[in-house]
Image 1 (cartoon, rainbow, N blue to C red):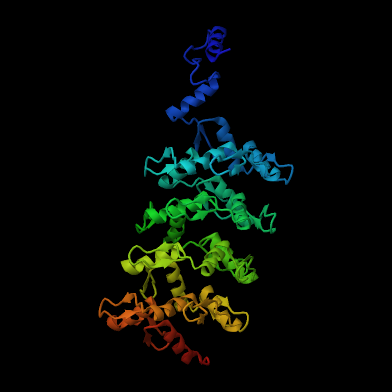
Image 2 (cartoon, rainbow, N blue to C red):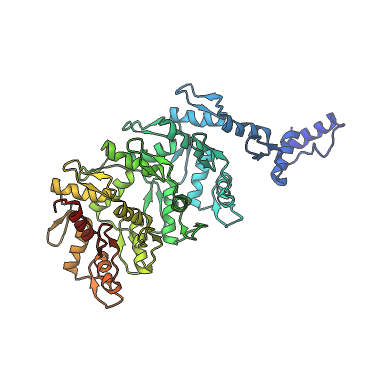
Length: 494
């Protein structure tokens, strides 16, 4: 029986009903489904949440949404006891236990748990992005990604944490955030036993064991574990920075960078360390900081055995052994191991220093440099050497200092065999062989092998002495000279 004949029989049986309502349109035989479908075109959302006022097209969607406020999770997994707001969430979760991945990509052979995941993945090969934002023209693979994106423009954050009041754009983000308060990490890696708060964190971590990097950049051939990492990388080639801070106008490559940057203006630090009470702007900074207390360094380099707090730190370190420097400056041709190093370097050419210290007015190229500089005024030195008790303002300075005790000099010159404790010392040393002096003073034309030497030299012309002693008022051009001077007042042995 065809759809048309079924439609005719329905009309005969229900002749008293409005014939227009029973028109079989786009395969909808059910009046309720047709009415619900029409709302896609009309934009009508008659079902409103009494808690937050959010409106929905279907009563079922509204009921499901209200559970985010009540905390009700009626669908429970029999394997691990985890509960879900809706049945689809439970179905998705069950595949974690079964490990079943029936949908395979015809291009690269990668397997997925759901057909929707596979479809979305295949678009990474075709480059198709059918859903476009009317505000900024950005394209997306799925309608849900577009919906999430549009909230950036509206600024709406309807999902609020009852513990700390922090608001989120998505229920998934709220759910992940709640685990910070509970400390729960339900997803365990079967390879090494490490536990995670979310399935996405576990998925990213698994890539460390498999070393699989299926997503390749068409511009430079670099491969990535996730589509998100590839997407972030592509912006390096395009130079696009679509996300702008409304307070200062600074633009960013991703929403996450913009979100972190906004906290500079608000000074909000919602993530606190339970060991020492120090607060942080992001969970990643808190996680990295916690490693100082535990001394745990779970990510080990296979080349030299050195341990790291995070997989990203390990990734950055392994490039030292390979010598790879894939990120090149278009201005001067200098190459870098990481995008962050290239970004920091670009400011050398532009001269931009947007981050200013409120204590002394000194400006910096990045917020991290400003943060470190502030410790000069506060005298805070949170990183302590376990061998001798000496404290430092930065983890990098502590790592460097620890090599004095261990005698380690991991950076070796291929020209003469001389080894160094710091990669920057090796870079500066190589210029002895090459004769390169890339940093030139615009005032007098004098050239230098490193940027720090140029910065110190510039103070001769400006007369600037940014480091002032609060005890006697004496000012210094360099932080190291200031540190030595302070010991005169403290009585500390030089």
